[in-house]
Every structure is written in C-alpha cells, then in structure tokens.
Image 1 (cartoon, one colour):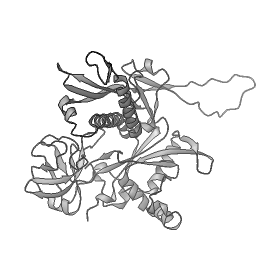
Image 2 (tube, one colour):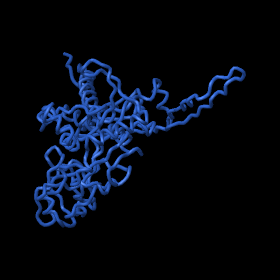
Image 3 (cartoon, one colour):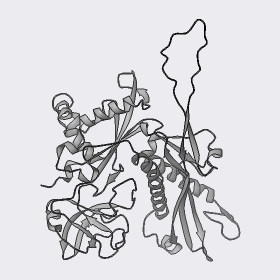
Image 4 (cartoon, helix red, strand yellow):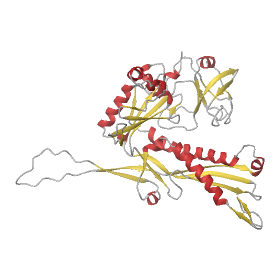
Amino acid sequence: MPIQTSAAGGAGAVALSNSTRTQYLDQYAEEVYFSRYYDQLAIPMGRDMAELIRGSAVQANFISKMAIGTSAISETADITPQALRDAVATITPTSRGEAIQTSQQIQIRNFLNDYMEKLVKTVAEGAAETIDVLARDAATQGTLVNRTAARASLDAGTTSHRLTETKFANAANQLGDLKAPMFEGMSDGGQQARRWSAMIDPFAFADLRQDGSVQAVGQYQQAGIHLNWELGELGPFRLLVSSWAKILYGAGLDAVDITATTLNTAVNPLATSLRVAANTHMDQTEAAGQWLNIGTEETANTHYPQNERVRITGFTGSTATIVGQGPNGGLRFAHPATNSVRNADSVHLVVFGGPGSLLKLYAPEVGEFGEIVGPKRDGILDQFWTLGFKFWGGYGRIAENRLLREEVSVAQEAWS
C-alpha cells in the first residue's frame, strides 16, 4: 500500500516534499517581505535584471540638464546647440547566505512545538535583516548630513541636539532646493499629494511629539498626536517609525560619570550577564537607568551590525546583570573578549528620502529577497536537517541629493 511521506522512504512510499517545501516557501516569503524597512527607498535598477546582475559592477547613467535660454532667436544666424554632460554611479552586487543545522533527534523529541516552522521563521528573520542591512548601509552612509554638533558631541541633555519640527522644515527646504524626487499619492482629502519619507526610530519620534509646535497642535487641535501617537506625517514627510531604524550606539557625547571599559571574557547570545575589565561608574549608570553599549564605536561610515546595547540592572564586582534584545531578555549577539563597553550617549539617524533614493540589483533566479534552501537531510544516515537562505544582489546610492541624514540625540538618554 503506498504511503505518503515528506521524504522518500521504503518500498511503496511516495514523497510529498514539494507540498512541504511550498509551505515553508510561503512562510519565508511572507516574513521576509513584511520585515523590510530601508528597502522601501529602493527601486529595481532596470527591467533586464538577469543581464545586469552578470556584471561585477553596474553603472547608473546620468545626463545633465539644459542650460536656461537667455538669448532671443536671431533672424539671420542659427542658434548654437548646447553640449550636455554625462556621469555615472556604480553599484556593486554581493552575496549573502547563512544556514542552521539540527540533528534528527531534536526533531524526533520535538522539544519545541512546530519545531521546523519555528526554524523557518528564524531563517526568514535572519534573511530579512541581513538583506535590509545592505539597504540600510546604503541609506545611512551618505555625505549629505545635518548635525547640530559634531557626532561625538551630540548630547542627550541638550534640547537643541534633539529632533524638532524645525529640523524637518530645514530638511524639506534642502531636499526641495536640491530637487529631490517625491512620492506621488493621494492625500486624505482626495487630492494628489507629493511626499518624501522620514525613517525614524521610536526614541526620536517621542522627542518630535514633544516639540513645542507639535505639542501645541496635540494639546489644542488633534489630541490623538499625544493620546494615540497618531503623528503620521509632518509637512511634506510621511513618518516611517520603526525599531529597526539605525542607531549609532554610544557614538555621541561621553557621560560625565563615564564607563569606558571592555569585556573581560567572551559572551554568547542569550547571556543575561557580562564580566567587564573595570566597573567604574556602573553604579551611576544603573541608578540613572542608562544603557551600556557593546561593540566598536561607529565614528564614521563604517557600521558594525553586531553592535548592541543593554540596560544594566545590577552589578557585583566585575559582573553586570543586563536586559537586552535577545529572545530571553539577554544578549542578541556573541561578543569576543576585549569588545568595548561604554555608556556614552547614542546618535539616532533620521533618513529623509523619496522614490529611487536607492537602486537595487538582485538575481531573478534567486529572488528579490533571496530564497530559502531546504529543509534538506544530510549525513551518511540522513541524521541532520539543514535550513538556510541565500541572496545575490546589492543596493547603492545613485545621487547624493536624494537622501538627507539628520543625526540627533534623544531625551530618553539624558542623565538625571
């Protein structure tokens, strides 16, 4: 009698691996698509993506505008045609891929309900963040930037260093003067609306809602701004608020009671404590409810995706207990010994941009957001299950006048 199985078995067995894989593909595609953030600024580079992706680097071409005519047309002599100029921007594709492997015994014991489905979700989240980091770096490492002070001097305790309505007005003026493209859409009133987007994290968003001019509207006209946080747009900007917005942890002003040390021993993901080389001023950091930033300080346009920050909840000797972004409330990433541990203010990045601010390339046969690989069995006894993802493509800035970055401090990190 034929037996339906998820993988080929003995005599009479009929594998339904395609049905099983389809389920995982759907889960992967849904998770990756809805987890994209900075990718929203990007458009595909061209229609013939399969041909473009073959090159080691791809050029975006630009042609200059015509000069403004200032002379009357002669009745006796012909005009002199204008000479246009061209320029290029280069986008270099890359590849990314990661995988996890488990033993068949873990699946048999099924110590987690729906174990394989959870692995698919984990791989999809990893793929989404890995790919979006490529877009994030392209969006946040440009040369068009506004700062009230030098990055290392941005102070959480200084009101003028925070995000305000005035900074939005300045951004609108600058992008408008630079002729940055805008999104076309319909406004609530049914009229054609033209907007840029503002990508912002929740901390900076809180400061914006407390800005004087915005606060007045919330108090006297639209209470939802404060009661329901319904500030969805400001001026010509649609606000895209997300915890995935880039923060340069510890890149701002050093604290008065500074903690500037290193890890004493390596730590693993999910760790809820860490040992440091020196605990100077950790008591003040804990008392003030402040953060410890772990990783290399991002002083320029080189970013470190494994950086993270944690709240310190106590310490004994050289061991600090912490609360972090890990699934169990601990660390999210592994960190080697000697990684920096600091309590300086962080710098929060607000990215203003419009359509086509970024161009992207991808291999059509793999997909715009990569593809899942597996689950598949491996080993002499098929005793291992492997699941992963792969992506070929890249993101690039095509013109510096299409993206403006505002670097700010936030009130939440001000020391009391």
